[in-house]
Length: 121
Ligand SMILES: [Cu+2]
Image (cartoon, rainbow, N blue to C red; front, side):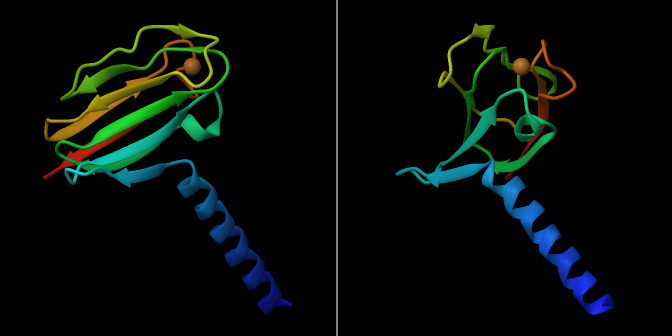
């Protein structure tokens, strides 16, 4: 019984891990820059996003339903998408050229839509 419980826990852990990874996809562009795609929606997919990238990489967020903005609140980068309402599929992207961390938030949904981008060499 204990064995089966252990298997169950591991299966759940793997399922959770897969789910969180599936929210972020990336592709390498011709010049070696990586483009990261993140969801920007009022759900767990956009809660406490954590991403480590390299200098020069691009992060692109795609709006789902609802009205959102995407604004840096602290750190090394400074950006603000402006408020985009009811425009699913809208995309905002930023090239991160500074080393260090940047925190960001959606002002209408600060408790569910926020994250941190860490830029390394
Ligand atoms: Cu929002």
